[in-house]
Length: 259
Ligand code: DAK
Image: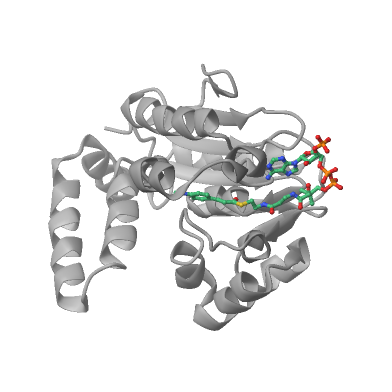
């Protein structure tokens, strides 16, 4: 698709958004733009129900391109920084199930890219961290916000203040990653899981929206959103299929259409 990113889609409705910028998948402004475009493409693609974000077998991403950033000034970031963050927000808002499959390093913006996904599957050799502080900056693409919402404020502060890297087991213990697999299996495991979600009903979109948007609201508003989205499920074909199937054949046998 782009110079440094590609999208491939299988028959089961699983797309792989692959990052490929040797040697470290550093996120320069081109990559950032391509990720935003990919998010829009994947959102619109009717044949895609779940997405695996993968940086290939060696590294997920070593973060923003420091060599590019080195020469940039306040005005440039002030003018364009919001657009960069918007790319990640578009990925986070993808109305489909997303899984980051992480081999090797996911640092800085790389870790933040993984944080845009619903789930993170890490290779046993994965190392995650937010080392921006060591460069004299702070995380700028969700690392102070999505990270603390996921692992808690204290752990996020430890990661962001210290700039350290954390191995797969440590990340699993703190809830930063959801599963750990051997390095040569992690991508396949992520695709397998994504296929299971891709076979799910349209209501998965409602569930994602309710959980993610509800987390940003007060409880009353969030519960009202839940009610609205629950009701909206009754406009889907899959709601009818799910309930008819239960009544006729028992639980868990419905074959959904994603409509
Ligand atoms: N950028 C540019 N080049 C990088 C790089 C990076 N992030 N990471 C590595 N490289 C380059 C190295 O400079 C080296 O280049 P040459 O010397 O060969 O020319 C080559 O890749 C191989 O790297 P190493 O020799 O260092 O390889 P090692 O295996 O020894 O170490 C490493 C791998 C990933 C642990 C290490 O390279 C490393 O610590 N990299 C930097 C990690 C880091 O600090 N990442 C955070 C970057 S700051 C924004 C939002 C977000 C951000 C910015 C703006 N807005 C919305 C405005 C995000 C900021 C960041 O992510």
